Image 1: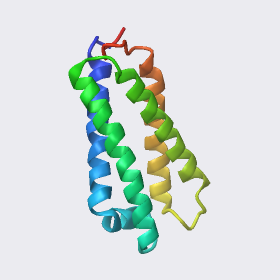
Image 2: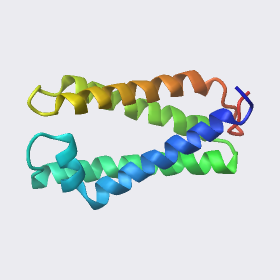
Image 3: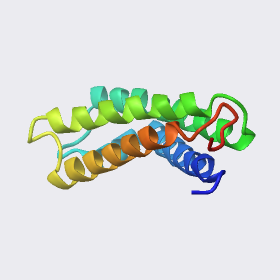
Image 4: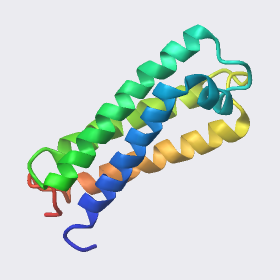
Length: 132
């Protein structure tokens, strides 16, 4: 793995996370319908927008730290790992009728993969945002 690869990966993941958050913020009913079996009611839209804010903040924080190459990228990656691990737990613990099986599987695999990548990568991230 070359010196800048973890920072590039963090930038890519951060941009994707922020884009997901923006989509959920702007269209919670539409994207929520993809995730859930039923119509997304007002309360669920609020919850999805709360989730959106978290995704935008974590994504932009990681992306900006990766681009700037300054201190703090490791912290953003670790914060994202905590959020992704919580998402995996939420998907696994959700009642069977709440999520489509494919959504549960894809979400759990994506969240677990992101968490594993972050845990593997944090030791390679120096305070300057590049591999140590």
